Length: 214
Image (cartoon, rainbow, N blue to C red; front, side, top):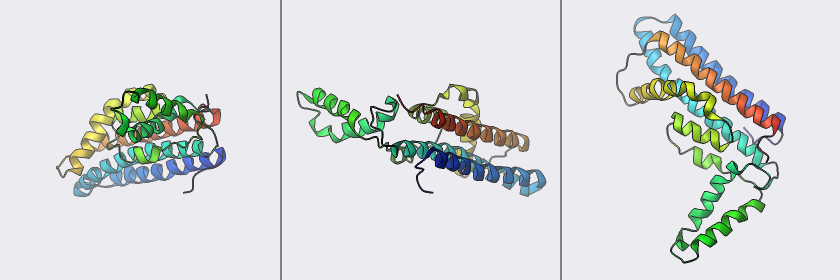
């Protein structure tokens, strides 16, 4: 899918990103409810990694689409919230590693970082977020914070993300035999769908209200 150039294009992309994930999760939910015996056990075990994949994939994809849209708007880093400058500044610091032993290294680093302000914003989130590993609650907080979304409203589902979803997914993905309770799976499916919808709404609201601007 091409990078959105307008707000309406991004809204459509966010809708599409959520829609296919909702459809796939609900399809598995229905399959589990109509299965029994060994088929039900297998579907439940297969369903947990799928739920996690949509949790991680959905959050990352929507965050990336959002910052790619911002990067296409022609703003400088001075125009947008400071949180979006972090990865660019990190890249500058890494490039200057060779001078860190110099007496005036701190001065040079500050000059480079403050110099970012007048550069056209190009936020390299995709390269970083693709390598962050498991999207536990701590990592989710970091991604949300980077795009100026309050993660506090998601805190109530921290245990579900870390202990139910991620822990079970890892055990199954590593080949352990884990019996998944059908009722618990249905509840977790609904929780994941709620999280994805909420995150999509938060990104959409930030876009419409242009909260990415200073």
